[in-house]
Length: 373
Image (tube, rainbow, N blue to C red; front, side, top):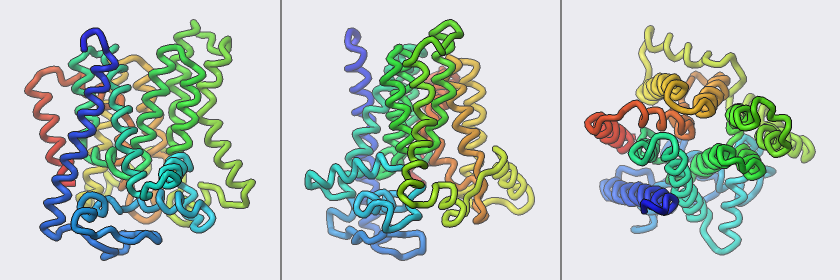
C-alpha cells in the first residue's frame, strides 16, 4: 500500500466502517435477546410515522433497532414528500431523495437509508484519511479516522441519519479545494448543504483556501467564486423552492413546531452552564456540555496545529450550531450528535495526542462511552 495511498485510505475507511457495523450488530443482538430494546412506540419520542415496527426474530435486531428518531422522518419524506407532514421541512432533501432512489430499485426504505449511511461513512473516512495523511502523516491519519468512529455518538455514522452523507460531502469539498478542483469542490459544498443546512459553514474555509491559492486575489478565479458561494446558494435555493411551493420556510417550522429559534451564539451554552451550577444537568445534556467543551478546546488546537481552513471550518460550524435557542428547555441537547461532522476536531486530537498510551486511552475510553450511549 506504500505506493497506492488511496488503496490504503480505502482499506481504513471500509475496514473501520465494517468493524463499526459488525460491533453494532452484535450489540443489537445482545440487547434484543435481553428484551432491552423497544419493539413498538412505548414512549412519546418513539415515532414510526406510518412505518410498521420491524420485530422479526432476525430483522428485529438487524433492522428494527434502527427505527429511531430522525431516521423515521427521513423515511417519511422519502415515502410521502414534504406535503404530508410539513414539520419535516427542516430536513433538507438530498438524503431522503437517495432513500427514494433505493426504494425505486426494490430496497426497503430502512435498508436503503442504512446502506447509504454505511457507504457514505466508508468513503468519508477514506477521504479524511487521505487528506489528513498529507498533513499529519500516516499515523496521524489512522488516529483521526479511529477517533471519528469511536467518539460518543459515533454510532450515528452507521445509523439512518444524514450526518454520514454530510460528513462525506464536507470532507470532499475541502479535499477537492485543496487539490485545486474548484468546480467539484463547489458541487460537493452545494450537495452537503442540501443534506444538512449547517454545511453552509463550508463557505468560510473554502474562502480561506482560495485566498491562499490565488495570492490573496480569489476573485480572479470563477471556479473559486463558485466553490465559496455554493453552500449559501444551496440554502437560498432550498428556501426559494419552499416558498414557490407554498410551504413554510424552515425558520417558521423550527420556530412553530420544533420550538427552536435563532439566538446569540453560545446563549444555550450559557444556560446549560448556569443550570449545571444551580440545579445540575440530566446525563444527556451534561454529555452535550462536555462535548462542547472538548470541541471548543480542539478547535483552538486546530488553529495551532492544522492549516487555517480546518480551524475556520470548526469555528464556523460552532457558531452556526450554537446560534439556536431551544425553547423547550433542552439547550444543547443535540450538540454531541452535531459534533460528529466537526471532523477537524478529531484531526486536531490526533495531532495533539502523539503517544501510544494517550491514543489507547482516548480510543478505548471513547468506545466504552459510545457503547453505553
